[in-house]
Image (cartoon, rainbow, N blue to C red; front, side):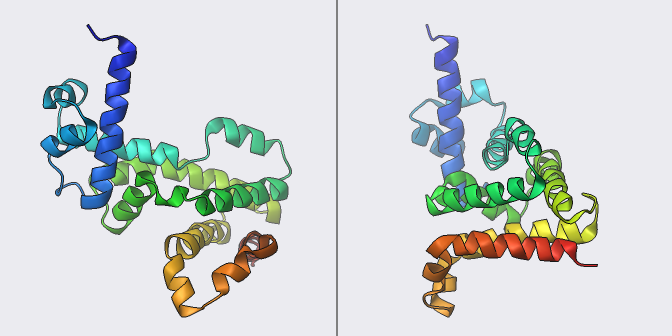
Length: 207
């Protein structure tokens, strides 16, 4: 007879297997049988933990979103710092994660797929998970330039920062093709972090 720990482990392995397949093929390109085979379990286990493929997909999207966010505990620690120091730390840590290859995880690939062709599940998850994240980052950036988190220039600056991470790390091959040597140049002496910090502050501080 399986234990609660075994059940939780099976559920986690199903979410991980489903996430990898959904990231590669999309929702419609994956069957329940595919997921069970990838997870090394039975279809009955999927039915036990998830009522349907739709329900499983929702949990996979939530798992991807949570993995991609600054946790509430981390936010609390960042709020104890001066806004400029906290913003620079967020940028530095994000750069480290991308350069370590975390941008190649199924979570990142699935979210990129969803951002291009969003499902109703992703729209719901964005409201629950990403909007609070935007609010927090806008709070940090606004604190640096003396504006509110609701200021549109501040929110444009945060959105631009996220877009630039995608450009320089998700599409680094395109950057290197169009501007040979630029990626290496930006990797030297924390140049990318310096440039991104200065740009975000400049954009947010515009009148």
